[in-house]
Image (cartoon, rainbow, N blue to C red; front, side, top):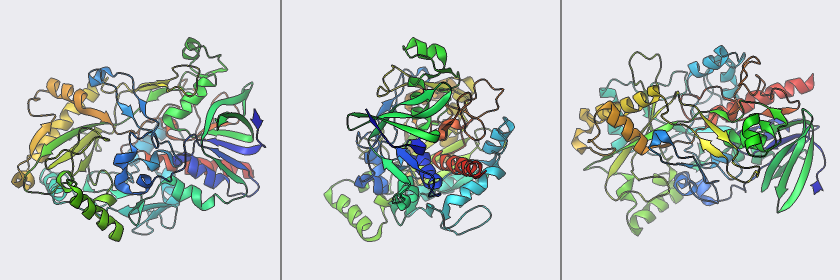
Length: 537
């Protein structure tokens, strides 16, 4: 057992939240910060190249390769569940889409008893780290670490899909981040000059030389060390050797909505009955840890087309691949510069809704699943998800061994409301595709296929084609002390345990209406600010 010198803060997880926390908490030279990351460095070339998303998902070098339990709502299927395995975490392998969600998301958090987490409270922290290409405004920041740029490529088929959305009654927008994201337009992305911009590049690398900041990769946290109800440090394994480090001020878990509750559970903190079932001695019974899992399930509706270029045929043959590679090499543009999804749409499954509940990621390509080859015929995919699912799942340890994957059970489509929205979302997709602007391309639905027509059949089809968009949140939710399922307070301090915080997507009480990476960064920004204020007092 090797014992490290003491640090003020020990952060577990060098992902989207952890990189932000390491930067902000080490701003004070008198504050010593240790960042532990179980994965490796982000020096894999396909992390840097935007289209490399296709080669990072399902790759053991960059992905922990988790799987869900068999899901009843998915007709018994188990899904791959991507989690970033490098510095930068999921920001190193995700779709790079810059999305905050809706103002109502955060106002809902406030109404659930989380004072200080409304939209007006959170917006300054989105702006704080933002470096938006349009410059500073009331809604956007400039000069921050988190670069936001417009898409560097457009496609005729996507422009036609956008026109079809307008014909269907969906307004155009050039910014999904104003508080109500209704509309159709190209996504803004976290890229810098055609390269992926992850949180490691944005927040960590510029400050790694600080004398008071130490970063350890390949450091697998084994358990949180407790002295009674006080967190004192972290036990971890690195290079096959056991290590232990003490935290003078606080231990901070930033290992994500899967990693953070799992680490607590193997440390003896979580639902007592679940821990005992797996032979883990209960240090603190907290029933909410690992519960309340929420995720966005995407339905990848795909259409064959004629007379228009898509990525499918653009990548066939060595000549075409070389052409694409040369364009990126010379200009940082073309297909290699594109995020997996370029065109976005937010609309309503029911006109009576106050704000959109459907998000589309529209792609000029088709494939059975990421990691597999593109189809050989021209096609596009209109992937649609319910951004406010009712279904709730769980993350629970499968054994006392921290290296054994936990049981991940999202419980997709487990409510009648979610099944109804799923069926309706496929119908809305068909209505859009049936509009005149797409007619000349003769779109032909091949996934799920026109044999599915009734609501019951469409819900069945949703179970057949649904897959995760990997936005897990909520497994250590923020809430008032009177809520027995709440895990942390409004400053992300764990109830019942001293000197321990969880600062990542786990703490979201309800999932945001859109991609969850930038909201996670905001949570880290806001909580780090609160911690620094408290430390100065």
